[in-house]
Length: 204
Image (cartoon, rainbow, N blue to C red; front, side, top):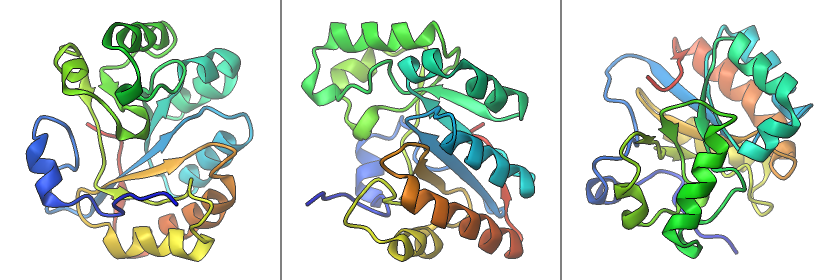
């Protein structure tokens, strides 16, 4: 069974203060992020839903998926969203030698020109992070759990509704694995927070 924090605890943010966990603001702003795409149909669904609410988001893309799905990737950019590097092959930093990990990021950078980086699984060695002098490392404040097969659609929704607030960076996945939970949850999250007066912006 997977173990992870839905709401990132303050002590963890203090250990890695130079990583972006949330955006300091008192305004009703949320930062939706989508990992592991682009995917031809699932990313297209996300873009359509975001458009309904004039919402902007940040997509942390896998290089090989951008290479395979250039058309939908270009649509992300045309719609005014931001993109970030999520490695080329979705590598686990804890299990990968530093030089191989950094080469994989550089390979993804050929397809994703961005100064934003999110480590797959949130797993990154400090030795790797120190060498990423030109990248902002973006983590998160709220994890929807959409990727977790033990998380029901309703639980996924509640994870976001109960834990998100001004400045929260929220993680979803535009992937096959997360699609059932994502397709249910995202429209309801957009509707709920829009009605509560929130706007949705990309990571600045």
